[in-house]
Image 1 (cartoon, rainbow, N blue to C red):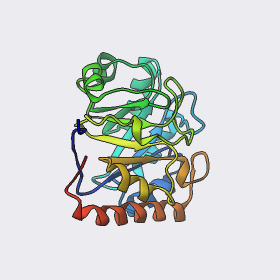
Image 2 (image 1 turned 30 degrees about the vertical axis):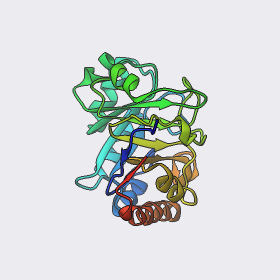
Image 3 (image 1 turned 180 degrees about the horizontal axis):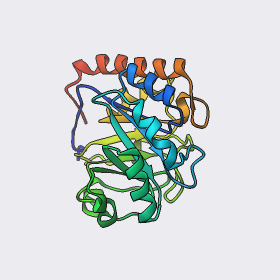
Image 4 (image 1 turned 90 degrees about the vertical axis):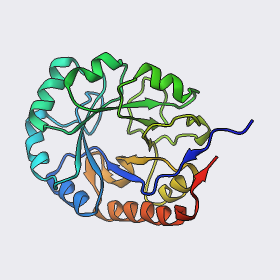
Length: 226
């Protein structure tokens, strides 16, 4: 039996994550990314103190989404970070259930490590029915993101008919091939555009965006993939 065909997006959304410096946020916006992410997860080397969040938000260009990322943070910490950053979207990468994720009155994406696991889209939609979308990463379940582990294309649910971002081990040299291979709704990168955790590399950011856009142009002749 053939797998369900997945619609090819006309334009792959780009999210750069793990910002710690306002100047890097400004450059990312100038390069045309769709979203920038700020991490508040305690286990991340890119974690930002909520007190520094307003400076990052001030560097944001209009019409670029601002994403606050958490991993099993207590509710009080999530609310404090939201108050400081004023994000447009939340992203949860821990064991948070749908009730917790929607508690804060903002759209949310659920991040999932699919390394060594198999799951179908119907299961994801049933567990997080109010999610705006999903971030599919290559690390093992329960581990923090940003590890650089590639996601096996075979682990991507063929029936996931909801916005989803491909994450895990992407960089300017491989993202074009990844987009051509699986045609994600969007891509999410942190370490692949950095000099060090939280310190972005302007040249790598530019090359990453260029590679995604080149892959999008190649895909214009491919209305669907199966």
